[in-house]
Every structure is written in C-alpha cells, then in structure tokens.
Image (tube, rainbow, N blue to C red):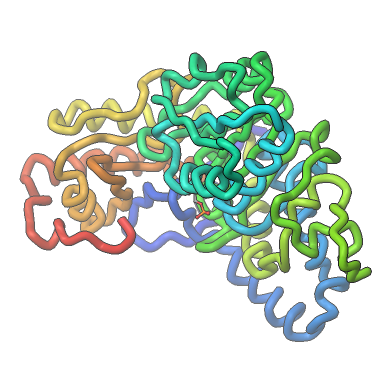
Amino acid sequence: MPTDFALTRRQFDLPEGVIYLDGNSLGPLPKAVAERVGQTITEEWGKLLIGGWNKAGWEAMPMAVGNRVARLIGAEPDSVVMGDTLSIKIFQLLASALEMRPDRRVILSDTGNFPSDLYMAQGLSAMLGQGYSLRTVAPEEVMEAIDDSVAVTMITEVDYRTGRKHDMRAITARAHEKGALTIWDLAHSAGALPVDLAGSGADFAAGCTYKYLNSGPGGPAFAYVAPRHQSRVRPALCGWLGHDAPFDFDPDYRPAPGVARLRVGTPPVLQLAALEASLDIWETVDMGDLRARALELTDAFIAGVEAACPDLKLATPRDHAMRGSQVSFRHPEGYAIMQALIARGVVGDFRAPDILRFGFTPLFIGPEDVEKAVSVLAEVMATRAWDRAEYRVRARVT
Ligand SMILES: *Cc1c(COP(=O)(O)O)cnc(C)c1O
C-alpha cells in the first residue's frame, strides 16, 4: 500500500500557522508521545518502581528499539543498539575500528563533516598518541584520498550544511579494496532516505533519533556494527550494561555477545518511550515512497526559490543521487533572513557562515507548504524585510 502522507501528517502536533522546515534538526512532536511517555511515567515508573526494569522491559529497550530502527536503515536483525549521544557512539566506533587495523594510523573524513565528529576523532587521536591522526579532504576528494594508509573512513552520508550526499556503496567498496574500514554517520540519513547498510557492506554506522526520527530533544543515538565484526569489537567505553553478565557484578570486564556490548550505562527509558511512539508512525512508511516525495518537495522548493529570489545561491546539488532531504541556500545575510522567515512562521535554520537550511520531511510537509514557504521567502527578499537590527542579534542556538 502506498504511504498515506496525509495520515502521517495528522499524527504530528504542529503549532497552527507554522511551516516547520527544521525537522532535520529537531523533529516535531508526534501526538502519541505525551500519552506513551505519560504511561511509562505513571503506570511503569510510578507503580512498578524498580520492578520496571524487568516487568516493563526497560532493560531490553536498547536492543528492542534498535531492531525497530534497523528496518529504516537496512540493518540486519540484532545489529543496532540504542543509547548515549551520537558523539559518544562515533567515539566508540572509531576506537573499535582503529583497534581492528593496528598497523594503520589515519582516520579519513571530509571537511564538510559535522564538527563534533571531527572533534571526537581529534580527541581520540590525541589520547591514543602513537601517530594517530585525522586527515580531512574536500567531500569530492574522499574517493581519491582512500589509500592504504587509511585505517577507517568516518563519513557523514549527507552533509549537514549543504545536503550533499555521498555514495555509500562506492566509498565502502573503495575502502574495503584498500583494506580500510568504514564508519557511516547517518544523522541526516536515518528517516530521510532509504539506507542499505547490509547491502552496502558498511562496517559501522551511527546516527541520532531526535532529527528525522522525532524522538524529542536529547533522544538517544543508535549504533550499528556489521554482524561479521560484532564478536571482534572491543568497546573503548566498557560500561556495566555492555558486560556479558551485568548482575554478576564481576570486577573484570567481559563484553556481552553481539552489538549489545556497545551499551554503556543506564538507558534513557522515557526518551526511548517517546521514540517508540514515533516509530509507530514510521511502521506505516515505505522508504521508497518517502524518497520520491522528498525529491518532489526539494525539487519544487529549488525551482520556486531560484525563480523568485535571484540573490540566493543554491548550495545543494541538483543531482538527485547527490542530495539528501534538505535544501540549502547561501546569502551573506543568511542569519537575518532566517530570523525574518521564522518571525513569519516559516521555520528553517542557519548554519555559519552563510547557509540558510530547509529540511523537507514528507511525514508532515507537503507541496502546499513548499508553495507557501517559497512565497514568504520571496516576499522577505523582495521587500528586504530581513534588514532590521533585531534580526541580526545572534541567539545561542542558531
Ligand atoms: C546532529 C549531529 C551530531 C550531533 O551529535 P550529538 O552527540 O547527538 O549532539 C553529530 N554528527 C552529525 C553529523 C550531526 O548531524
């Protein structure tokens, strides 16, 4: 059955009059979340107290929810685990991958990667010493830069700024040909487009759930380890819940079988409950339908803005194969323009130095929203409505 996007849209609680083009940064609230989390609080925490870990299945949530996320990213059963934040998961996966390539010292990434990923690689290299380093090249040069000094590639599939998409299959194949491992950051892929981790031969992946997967602010990350590597991975962060038998309280660490060894400490049960309510909506979504709709929306937005706003310069590739589910335009006054848009109910965001970023999330954004957003943006540009001192005052979060 084709995905009913009118139905998915009705399952979100969006403020009246707002066109929310920032679901790529913080997904909006699914209507079912309040009840689901409320029930976890009153019926489980409130009544079961400590018994909730067994009776309400809290203990099993990181793997159980991981299996629901697995479907959206083409991962094998029992190869995805939930917990911590994306930055932490990147650190863990990097440390594991480096240990599996002991004769190599280079982490390869691109200059468009999200700073936290790069910082994690820098921090880990400094901690390890022994000549480990992070090498970054332009996104277009990644393929060429994979040589036999590279231990691991750490690439975010879709660039958070420009929306440019890498070819996961090709990069993974090239890395393997050169003897390197791959870590894929799916922050702007999970819930944004079809991902085929198993089919691409990816080694490791991680992503967050508070963006396209709508788990709410602070929602946990997910981590993926290909089944063929799971028994070889030594977690750098050896927490008790990643232990083979946490309730033996053994003073010596012994990793759990499988991907569960990437668990660290106590899971965020309330946030996982919120994610579960959101995943109920995702159960009704076909990723092929989602992709077709997202391309339709992004194409329409690009065409509309280019026709009406000659001063905005497209930063996102036109080629469908090279595009995620967002559209970015450059303008030196991008910050002020975005504030003027937000004041008019069209919510995107700004990424330094000059990027206006608009996320297209078919679960709750349709063609009529695109049309309205284009007309508001055209009006803001034509009248220079952005040119006000108040729109230049930078908030802490942009
Ligand atoms: C959003 C994002 C992050 C954020 O990491 P957290 O630890 O969840 O704050 C990391 N990497 C990329 C590529 C992102 O887009």
